[in-house]
Image (tube, rainbow, N blue to C red; front, side, top):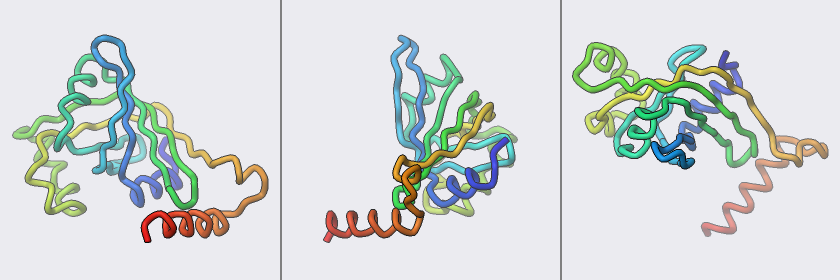
Length: 151
């Protein structure tokens, strides 16, 4: 269900913009920076500071996450249903080492893990690719833009 390109994107850019719905029915989007691909049908993030997102998912577990490679201007959209794995459970203890390997300085602050059972995952590209732009050209253009912004 999650193809190799989407897996690579999430591994390289684990910041996912996570869309949920509040109990009042309003849309909510929050960035979560600790995403991992657990298997071909599951992604997950660590709850370090996500009270609103967890409240929304407890009321309605449907969600969508958007990942972006800011230089290539490519991305992935992942839809699914979330389940919250609380600290001090066997499931949490079994999964925590995955985050300890990637984010050892943050792992002790993780309060829960949010697993998303993926129902759909698709990659996308920005419109300049439709006009013949290459990844190399996109990377060069956005590196130059970022350099101009931060130097």
